[in-house]
Length: 76
Image (cartoon, rainbow, N blue to C red; front, side, top):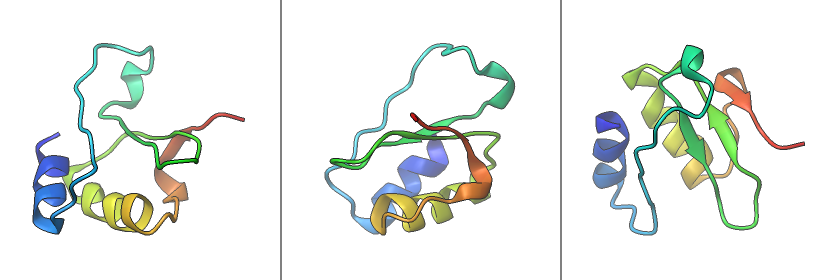
């Protein structure tokens, strides 16, 4: 979470919500991050390292390009 907060702050992103949750049944894939862009389905990223976070935020959150190799779930 710290890496996400730092990257969001560094980029000056305003309309972003970061929330901590309890177990959602995918503990084996933690740490997790969901990206939900307006009008698009949720994408869940897993098995993340702090160094993965800047790319996911830049590519997906900012530019709308899913980082496929880190995706562990999305609605069908």
